[in-house]
Every structure is written in C-alpha cells, then in structure tokens.
Amino acid sequence: MSNFMDQWKELRDGVMVGLRSGSIAIPMLLLSGYAKLDLSESEAMLILQLIGFREREHKDFPTPGELADRMSLTEEKVSATLQKLMKEGFIGIDEATDSLTGMRYEQYNLDGLWTQLAMVIAMETRQEQETEKTGPAATSLSPEAPAGAKKTDRAKQEGNIFLLFEREFARPLTPMEMETITGWLDQDRYPVELVHMALKEAVFAGKIHFRYIDRILLEWKRNKVFTLEQAKEYAQRFRGGR
Image 1 (cartoon, one colour):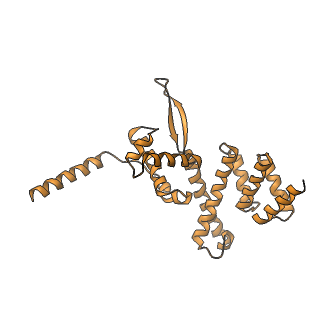
Image 2 (tube, rainbow, N blue to C red):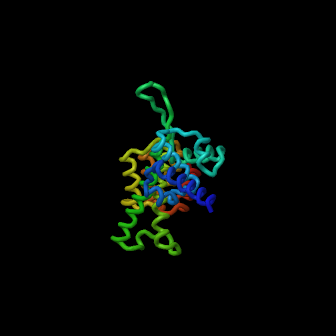
Image 3 (cartoon, rainbow, N blue to C red):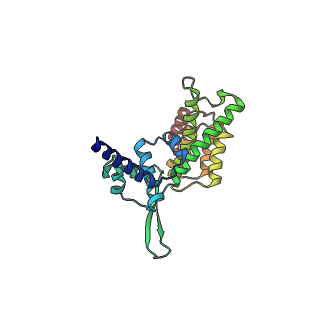
C-alpha cells in the first residue's frame, strides 16, 4: 500500500509540474476549421507544435528533430509534412535580422494558414447570410448533399480559389484583386470552377493578369458558356481555330 501511495504522489507531483509549465493560446477557429482546409490531424498538430515552440520557448524555427520529439511522427515524416504545408501555402519561411546582434535567422510564418482559414470562414458566413435572405435554394450545390455540407463545400471551394490565384501569381493577392474575385462569384455569379478554368486558360496563354481573365469570363458569358464542360469544349474549339 505504501509503495502504491508513493507512486501515486510521484505521478500527481509530475502532473502538477506539467500544469505549472504553462499553456499556449490556440485559436478556436483553427481547432474548428482545420478540417475545412483539408488538413489532417498530424498536419494540424504540427502547426500547433510550431505555435507552442514560438509562444512558450520563443523558438521561431524548431528543427524537424525537435518537432518529432513531441509527436508520434519520425523526423523524416515531419520534414515531409513541413514541405507539404509550405507547398500548399499554409506556412512559409521568412528571414529576419536580430536587432541586437545583426545576425540573420529564419522563422516560420503562418500567415498563409490564417489567410486561408479566414477566407473559408468568411465564405461560410456569407453563404449563411445569403441563405437567410434568399432561402436554402440559393446556395445549393446538389440535391443529394445535406444543407450543412453544401455550405461547407462551397465555402471551401471559394476559399481555395484565392489560394489557387496566389499560387499562379506567385505572390499574395492585393485587396483589390480579392475584391475582383469576390465580384466574379457574388455579383456576376460565375461558378467557382469556371473562374478556376479561366485562370488556367490565362496561364496556358501566358497572360496571367486579371484583365485577361475577366475578358475570358466575359467571352464565355457572351457565348452562353455556363459550365466547366462547356468551357473546356469552347477552349478546345478556340485553340483548334487559331
């Protein structure tokens, strides 16, 4: 009995030390929204570890080994996951200079994650507002999908279109450019997949700028091109006729 009590006290004391070590601030929107960005649990946990290193240890660039020590992933898997998150625009790496020593150092940047998360949440909010004004039919994607899934899927699609533009332009979008895309979706009522197709056509033509993409969308509208399939057929005919 005495041995059991000693072990229990050691465990209790250990837990208390852990609790006293502090906590980190985790945005609730990240916990509730990471799945909407198609992030896996291990990817979301890796992001939380980056936040933890920054907030608790003031370490902005932990190594894959340090991250792996706190996760159930190997160092190689951590490195691969970091590369994937960077490729998809969720995290970046910035260079900075220490104001005291003049030494240059690297740090992880999570602005891409917050931008994409904010876009998805904003799109969901807008869809909810539209539903309240015009009824559920206005935001339907398919008759088979549940109402909640329809709104989430469409919000995800519309949030991702901004990321697709940023990837092709190889830079963050300006507020005016984001407003242009929103106008295509909200005012002109172009489907998300049609805007994406217009972006692809602009890339194919080597004319990656908004004015050219807008011309493509207007040309399709004049020729009664309203679906992705129609746009593909029109693009093939256009290329064949050149």
